[in-house]
Length: 419
Image 1 (cartoon, one colour):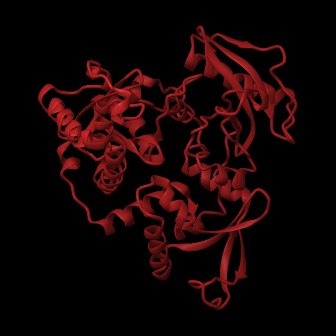
Image 2: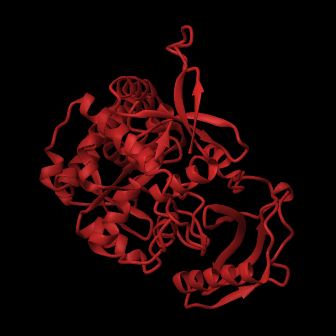
């Protein structure tokens, strides 16, 4: 780590006196960031019960996604950190042990149950936003439908949208693609009156929150100020370093203005420090960091040499712009790109070796076989015999996770590096 004197702007006014700001080299920054995301340790250890709940707690949340070409996003995220993980382990801690609950961060996610009291801020915000949005879309039927669906769940117990298939939706009613009961279920879930009690396949089953959420979390109350402080603290713990905007975006729980005000106060009190983080291209980005993080920065954790297949929704890569800054890895999911213009296929997975993203792989589970269609190394990555052997070993592990272990490679699967 190096130290330089840099001008620090003060709220848009003239620069304050020069202050000494540490610079975090790109390799150091990657190690700090990946350690916080559970990718600097070997993917071994327990992956059930309390051990699995601890992995999710360390990450902060795990995004849920329906795409299942190889494995669902949440399953692949957890498997890449604990390769003894199997999907029934998540269903156990969420649907039965109630160690987690499902709600929204930037997208639908599995979240540690102890975070539930902080989500009341999200419930209130979504209630106001969706009420305004959906009542205009769905006209006078909006409020009666909510009351009817809530009464049905209260009286008859948990249900999913398909339990209400007897309803029909006419084009002239103003309802969009979802039928009224589906909109009502989602509204009641997003606003906290209902909770997802379980999933079967990928279908959500809803029940009253009081019948799903343990009372110590359901009845806990925090002030808005306490929630903002928790959200910023918990995000910085899990990112290692971040701008105030990145702190707000991590859980998508608080406003950017709230995170910015927290950062100003935390800097003034010495609770956090500023650091210039070097990107893959050498450019610096001013960020916040805990003082204790700087104390240990010159003793970085050794990166594992093994190769891992990651989910496109992995928390380390979810922020595509940050992934490009930090790793020099330009990655977009090309699901909606028309086939003639699609370069990497319908759905490809990032591949990491140590602290480096070395390529992307197109593979899918088909009829019980993991079919590897193509691997594109990143520009400058040489696929020697050792690296290819490590990649094949990871794909063998992936095949045992997603299938009975059978794997088939296309004849031209190893492609030329990306440019």
